[in-house]
Structures are given as C-alpha cells and as structure tokens.
Image (cartoon, rainbow, N blue to C red; front, side, top):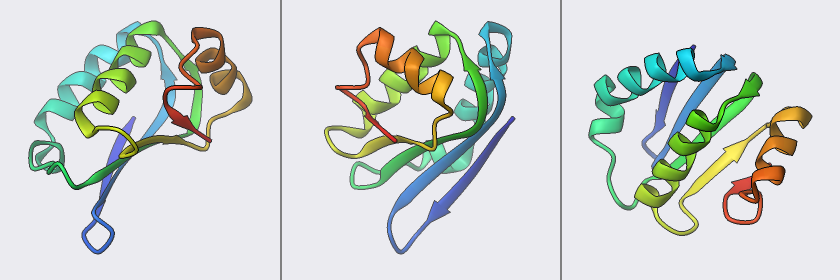
Length: 103
C-alpha cells in the first residue's frame, strides 16, 4: 500500500502508493505515514515525491494528504509523479494540477 525510499545524496523522500486510495485506505495510509521514521525525520531542505504509478483511484481525503504534505515541504519541494490518466484528471478537476507539480 505504501513504501518509503530516502535518497540521502539527493535528499529526496519518495513515497510509493499502490492500489485504490479511497477513504478507507487513506485512514490506514495516514497512520503508516505518521509512524514512518523517514517521514518523522523529514528536514526542510528535503524534497518529497508521491509516486502514484500503481494508483488507480484517489478520494478527496487522499487529495488532502497531498495538499498537506505540499504545504509542509514548501514551494517547489513537493511533486506527484507517474499519475495514471484518471488520477491526473482528478487533480485537474480539483484545480490542483496548477498548484502541485504533477507528472
């Protein structure tokens, strides 16, 4: 469901999500993120990437997680990578495609 990778040379935390990020899954995801040492040790000069290559659906509660972490990371330090077309469209409909760096 969630995997964490930290590249110490580039100072990038990559969070890889898999499956449907519906409301039930998001509750679990929040707990996992809060318990993850890499996320607790996040520093202001680290970048954060949410990889959504294996995500087929996102709920509004997942979008809130994205916005929250984007604010925490700061301008230009957060991105969402490898979105499936439907997921990318969801961000676009919500208007967040212009605020968040989504690929």
